[in-house]
Length: 198
Image (cartoon, rainbow, N blue to C red; front, side, top):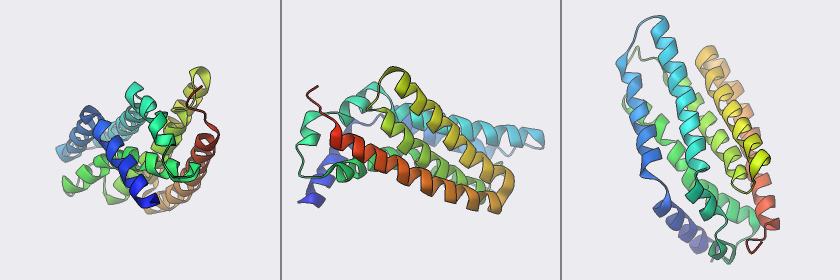
């Protein structure tokens, strides 16, 4: 029953996710194939990282996504709060990973973002998306705090891997695992207390 309910939630949410955000992330990935030289390469890499995190966070917190997170029929599913949180997180995380996937497919030696940086970006995007997902249940200033935290954490994790290479990737992995676990757990606890009727 739990697996069927989870699959149904994922199918519903995936059908509502914007193609614009997915396309923007995918198109951004091709910027890595431009192979600029010198300082331009660093600027392109940093731009891809920051823009990718911003698009992922914005896609997660768009109005329709917020409405989908709090939709009444999702709370009627035979799932606990933590299971609803995992089901709700699958689609936004999958969409955010479109950028690293395109970066890998379009990668050529000498591109601004190498394999370690792409892996670090993937970690940063997932962490940022999960933090931003918690903001869908907040309003006003509290949501703004989640947005700022998601942007800061996602960019920091990705840029650490970009600047420090393999060592930065290991640090980013540690930070991303801790942040992702804490964010998903907090989202599940908030969902368990959330009353969609209010």
